[in-house]
Length: 92
Image (cartoon, rainbow, N blue to C red; front, side, top):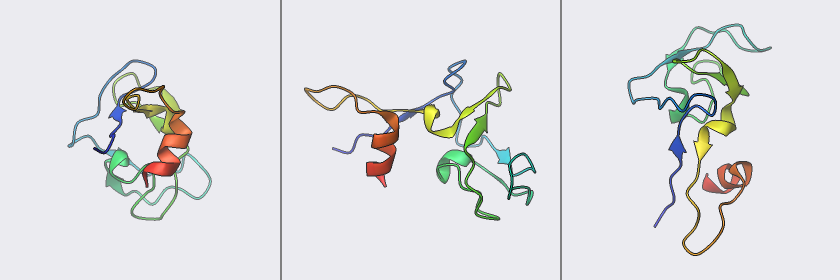
């Protein structure tokens, strides 16, 4: 069975809903096309300009944290949890 991550803000534990949306603004070099989408559908990659967002701002607490820190993977059956970065790299 595929292990899917639980997605929530690493700072306040807010959980984005399917209808939660972020806007591509000029916050990082190469960004700012204005596209609006759910950043977790694309693992932080803007569908408008292709910018990969390193940081994601929580829509609840308004603080930003590394995008990959939002993904919380359950431990494999009978084993320890893998590092988030390793799990994201192998999940694709």
